[in-house]
Image (cartoon, rainbow, N blue to C red):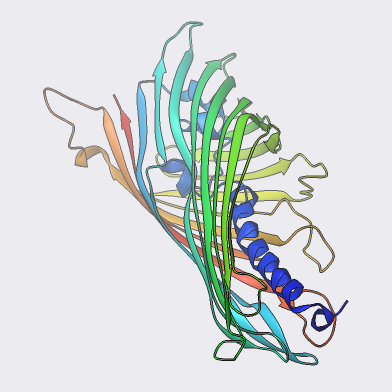
Length: 449
């Protein structure tokens, strides 16, 4: 049925529903983000996350706990802060038909500025079985504070709108992980890890629209939407590292699915309509609550190879294969490569490249998916230490300390399904190509006692 044939009140309600879906789809972004936003650790981040085969510090908890067995002393790794900025502009996201086949459009603009203390991990040699290490850490791989707006005027042959809509997403994800690594034979390490996570997501939207602005039937619609989701999750990991030669090593790490142990969601919507278009002015508040449990991230397995020339240079490559099912139809392998070069004895440069493909099918006019993005990233960092160590004192002496400063750039390329209002003809919603840019600066410390 063409929109202009609907009674005016039904047409306005269609408008409200579509704008509401816009804000709701933004909230769904909380769990659709690809894998992890931030690289964990200092040395591992410099390699672009390609750390499965050569992990040898406490961040092995995250990448491959078998690498814990390589630690000879007590090791503390801290990524003090990650400063991140994201920008995305989905052009012509909201469209209204002004004449057959001609549309006026409004853009969806999204930004995110976050400061995240994303890694604290400590490992200690215990020698329970002669050559083994325990470790524990706190990781923050996800944190968002996205602000988005759609604003402007659009004029159709029947429906004229002055729209101001904004939504916000605030997410935090904390993972506490404990791990154990043991040297089984001269060349083989085994590692086990287990973790619990806490996720909190808050989203909301403020929508105001003037219909027939300046006309005799000028009316106003206002909606305030608030969502909150909290969840407790659990997962495990198993890893192996094998030294083929003193310089060559391979690694394998299996990460179990992340399961929700408990979750709750509350949604509050307040709507207000006033003006001659509506038979009666009204205001309404509704609250929906629900509890639910299910798998939120599928299992994956990492395969890595590394070459290490001690004190000179190292390189590593890694592939990650994700489990697939109807909810997560990821049929690609994430690739990572990293390079480390000792410019001086106390100065190291690292660079890496990584991919992060979406676990969704392609967005089409008829698909259930409303968003798909593939991410490509590069990292560059400098580490300096040893003689620059400020902890070398009589009261507190570290064997060595490395300070790392790095930068990460991520480019997202994908599609999103926009929204189109037909006042003259009928048709399908547009599929819009979009680019996402995220740049992050991180600072990290690696201390050996």
